[in-house]
Image (cartoon, rainbow over the protein chains, first blue to last red):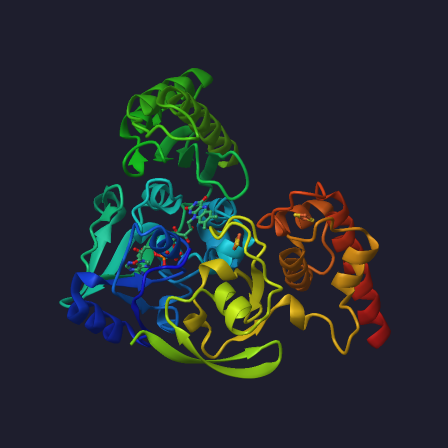
Length: 287
Length: 163
Ligand SMILES: Cc1cc2nc3c(=O)[nH]c(=O)nc-3n(C[C@H](O)[C@H](O)[C@H](O)COP(=O)(O)OP(=O)(O)OC[C@H]3O[C@@H](n4cnc5c(N)ncnc54)[C@H](O)[C@@H]3O)c2cc1C
Ligand code: FES
Ligand code: FES
């Protein structure tokens, strides 16, 4: 399986890359880690006439901190996310969850930006971005703009990015002191996408939930935030009963596609399990 | 046209080749450079038979373009042995029967070679996670794990001997 022919471009700055994208139009695609795009090209699901390889734009990789804001360059690889000391200290959900993505070789190439920009509801970073209230920095011909994760994922393989936009960075807030977190992902084997997965971030104040995010992977056309499930727990001293009730609320908004991983009923049932386990684990880590 | 000159270090040698931009690294290695060590198992980034080392990282060569390697240092299984002497990882796979049909072996060797630099003294669990991107349909993995453990010891002995 060989990808269809294309012209290869390797810009060394973001400006150069945006310039190429706007002059080449919709026939051009960004090449990041290539671990979603090249497989799609082999299958002719994507047939770009130009590939703009952004791997040599060094300003797009790495993690930096300004106050409470942690900014992750879009070209930061999964293995770099796993190893990063800042992320492990301040947003430990991201490195912990990245370990559940693909396998060591794929994680050397796959980038957090590519995982998000691809718009695949099976990818893990979209739900993680929603759980962390991430803000995307996007650069297009008119300059840079910020898009919150809640407005970024529009549909399957469809995001707020235009053809000539580059996602340059993902910014998240450091977790509040004592926050608990969890990512529970049911998969058939190492390197598989989720049958169902759930991310939870929770903070407690006086034994009651003061902050909560519950988000879901591969259970609808995009990653989903389970607002109703969060509302069940918000302000409460959590009991097993409430966790069950929250899971039911999350299951009610699941709309998974049937595939080899299971039918709708099975995936929705597994979503309920993942939600319960993620809430319980996040709470056990919160103080 | 869509052809480009690519310069890279390949198993320690400088090479300069005209490459079609759509050529995958694994096809470049096998068909253009006649290095048939990296195998094509699945062609879909699942099996790891095509694993090579690019700039000190394990990469699946079926999901990487040859043109992306311009300026890179690429190592394949052909570059492991030096002056006809097997690399400790190769020796260990041979001694511990870490292979049967051998199809997965070049990928297993290249991944183990890199993994033992990332983690010179791994536990069994860490080995299993470290080679989780490589499938073997013959051995049941048991002897592969033993081979990686034995290679770790050999490499450490070598390290202490030269220290
Ligand atoms: C065997 C295997 C298992 C996998 N398992 C998982 C898994 O469990 N969970 C998971 O989340 N993913 C999984 N993946 C997908 C993998 O994580 C991909 O690397 C990721 O989806 C895409 O990131 P990339 O850097 O490779 O992007 P690419 O493949 O290069 O690009 C993907 C798309 O996004 C666009 N794009 C990329 N970067 C940018 C940017 N900065 N700005 C604008 N557009 C951009 C590209 O044009 C393309 O359309 C798996 C992949 C493989 C091969
Ligand atoms: S051939 Fe590359 S991973 Fe299987
Ligand atoms: S030895 Fe046959 S596939 Fe591994």
